[in-house]
Amino acid sequence: MTAVFRVGLVRLVSRGATAPNSLLQAQTNALPAAFQQKCNISGKTMRGGPRVPKEPPYPYKTKKYTVLNTFLDKTSKRFDENSKVICVEGPIASGKTKFAKELAEELDMQYFPAVDLDLIFINKYGYDMRQLDPELPPSCRSYDVRNFCLDPSHDLAAQFQIRMYMLRYSQYIDALQHIFNTGQGVVLERSPFSDFVFMETMFRQGYLSRGARSVYNEIRQNTIGELLKPHLVIYLDLPVDVVQKQIKARNVDYEQQSKVFSEAYLRDLEALYKQQYLKDIANHAELLIYDWTAGGETEVVVEDIERIDFNQYESDPHNKKMIDWRFPLESEWCEARIKYGHEKPDLMNYFNVPRFDVPELLRSADDSKIWRDVWFNAPGMKFRPGYNADMGDTGLATKTKIGINEAI
Image 1 (cartoon, rainbow, N blue to C red):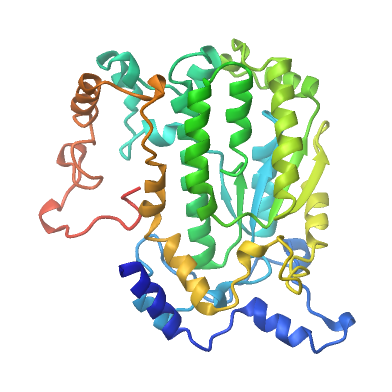
Image 2: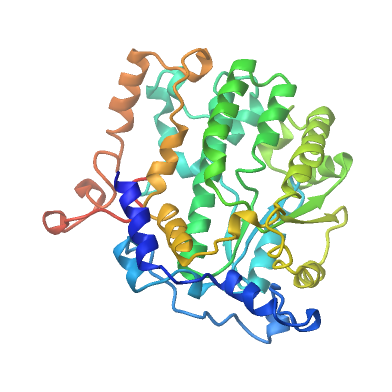
């Protein structure tokens, strides 16, 4: 009932307000084709300087955006041609990190790095929870990418991949929250939309059971539809033999010792990327693929991006491309902004899929009790961040509320 009231109120206060894309379409339909305005991303070189925001960014990290805020603070007014979501994809060790950073810098967008399990195992005070492993039963110990590379057939491999999907999902919500509150575009390394290629590769290589795969797919089906798909996906392509050379060249100890990155594993990963993910995402987003065997120039990619007219699909309501971002009413922009803002905990709750038929994803009651006693007595874990006197937090008696994005 609360959600219905919220939606109704947002639409009431926004009645008569039209989103920029629809307004642009109405204006340009009356103009000759040669004079129609295009909605192209532009880099610093083309603009001749940094991006100038249309409106000051909303301080979403310290202040909630609620229904009451929609009266005075509209959402679409901050959006410009660079208000886009770009995902950089590619095989392991393809140079995604360096490229994504350079791309975000040139386009004046916010860069979101690849996620890892440090986000779970290192708490707000910098304490590494993996130090607790000797005190925990085997089913409750840490298992991250290092463990996967060294022992991919471990029972915790399934939990590892589900957690990776959860972290990518959480980060993508953060990226949407950023773009809706600031108007600044975002560049992400991988996304929750492509995460399934790793799960499926693990299954094909025998690292995941059929039951664990079923749970992952059920969770994905329950969650992925809540997100807006990216505007652009950039895939950096490398042959399998080059990927293996790159993995060897970067000389990460656990990768060197791993049996995971075999030719069969990398070929399955490549096939799933190209035959399933890229084929599907191309129906919803613009797609650029580059042969990155010898690396490449970010400037060339930026020039290709600047040639894309992201607004060309507005006139066809049946075209799936960019359909997630077609909000004809200002109220719909505001609703999305609220959804990806302080309603993030509700979205993360969709991961709670009740499945009790996959042993490697279950813990016994006794193991869970031990884990809870150990985990929540670790440094900085007894209370919420900011309320742990033993970690140096002060002013506890006068604090009245928690951080906006803390309950994640």
